[in-house]
Length: 261
Ligand code: BTN
Image 1 (cartoon, rainbow, N blue to C red):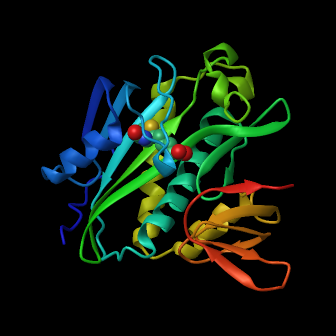
Image 2 (image 1 turned 30 degrees about the horizontal axis):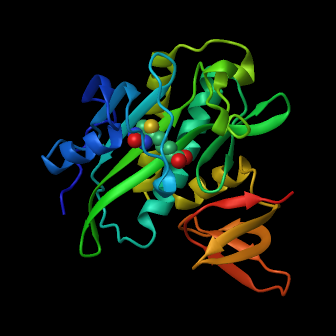
């Protein structure tokens, strides 16, 4: 296992104009041995990646696209590490946005960053964690963060207009992208420290405080089957616990959910 070299997140930065995907680029750099905490930033992406094989709309001049290389200090097995990492990232990024913009940010499981746009919660950001394993051991992870910062309504493609928004639309104010990015890196560094110190409970507690999902009836797809239930909790790895109408508790480890009410 490669151990963390104790570098602060963001001490090493690579700023690019346009790139296919900051995550793909950061994965290559990590393969080449770039250190823990290296951050790749881009003004636009031509092949931005979202979760579940989707794309991520990434026009220039408006948003934040960044990827952080992490080399965990403790051995991480592939079962829980990525789930808790994305939960941690969602907590860190929402806290930074709230501090810099005063916009309340909520999370939809596992890591959609949601803000109120004319009274309706819509997605203003997302997180994509990818990792390389040797056997069960995580060699490194890349956490990609995309935030719609200054998009106006006319900038949002019609396919996502119902579900997507921006911080600008939530607050009617343009935000300084580099100030926000600095805040995110600081907050990420702090929350990653908590994770490395084993303070999962603190991360989970904070995630639950800002969750839009807990307490909602949701629909999930697992193994090709639709499961409906009440979202009652997340476990210590950040997996979602659904209570079915039979009372049985089912654990949802990945994929998408739909909020039913
Ligand atoms: C999601 O689907 O919610 C995750 C979106 C993650 C997008 C970011 S933008 C920076 C980084 N590079 C990518 O290609 N994807 C992530």
